[in-house]
Image 1 (cartoon, one colour):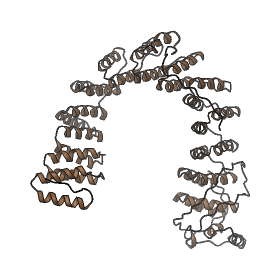
Image 2: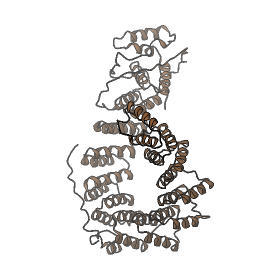
Image 3: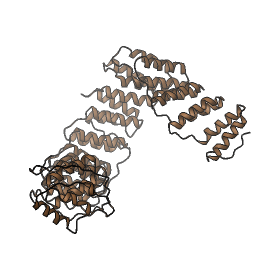
Length: 589
């Protein structure tokens, strides 16, 4: 290839890819401006004689936007905005809750609360409880997964200036996020923080991720700021979530500004976040813009490493934009770095996928002349590429090179070679290679036997396939559904449908997945051979496996019954299937 041909000289002289010319030019991107603490009371908790929690359903309209968590702690008294009431059709705890005796002052306070016009009937039992009792109920509700009832209890506790059990609040927040009810999770978090609780980093990240998924980006950004003020610092996951969301919305400038602002506020220069940002800029805006941002971020104390560059090389080379790849490697060299084995392996994998074989040879030669010679991984990448492209002679030659250079092949190497040999029909050579593995550190496993069994089955050599199957079972290797599927299709191809039936029964017994096409192939084959009784057995297996037979299977069965001299039975079966709307009127003659 002329546009990549200078790779050899350029990498040798400068270890860059400036010679990769003429490939797809990276598109430019115009960035548009767019935008577990328990604070329970020390009083002895009263005794609950009986507590029953029935199914409690309420449909609450959650309101947005997120108002922010500006208050770090109000330990004693808590001021909470009035919450949205549940629908009147909701079922409450009602008379199933048995209250406890209190002193006259508590009863007076609870009576006043009960008579409040804003109090729903189902809230009355909770209002009568002290903080300790309500927290015990809250923990119980959370353990039972009663999220909605638990959330209402926290509302009541907030009105009474009671501090909720913070670990339970955390569980509630996470539970609502998992269910996609982000608004309710935000309300619980707000009450928790206002009561003096501090959610952990995982909980904050779950809420921020939930807000991003719902498209509430502004609220997510506010929560990142509140998170820092709460004493629970954001981590790399937090920043990665926000940055990815900004790019998904097309706010490229804002994503870059966001990370720059975080660095200026004292955020640790997380390398993984920096690499994610640079890779996303490269993906959406091109390599030139990514390298420009890379230089700008260095001014903020965020420096790239070889991992950052390798991610850019991987992205551009996969896209076939080798001119951009050359630009990235040139920038890498300008920072005093050198490509490593991952860099070269990435290039080789990409070049193989684009069938640039001469350039692959050049990169391998360059590796041999540097301090990063080809490794076992490199050879396996090459072998896989050669075998998939049908270049079996090159694959075998490379295998010999591995042995000569004292780079011992592993089981991946042998499985790759076996797959290539079987694909080209050299199953006997595959057996020789299998025998070569006996007694070595690369003992053949399930994958190895599956490759060979499938190879023999495709060639129609079912006796050899069955022999290998018996051999693997003797060695204690348990066949899987791939093994049995290969054998089933092999038996079908060899018109050995009774053997295929036995395998289907074995797969059914082991609860292995069977494709409906396999059932159909066996049933139709048995019908052609007029083995109706066995075909019916397979049909029964098919129905029990919840695979719906189609019309062709029923028609084949009817025809097979008729061909067997049982015309009346065939007609009866036909009429029954018509009555069930499975078949239409057809001629059986």
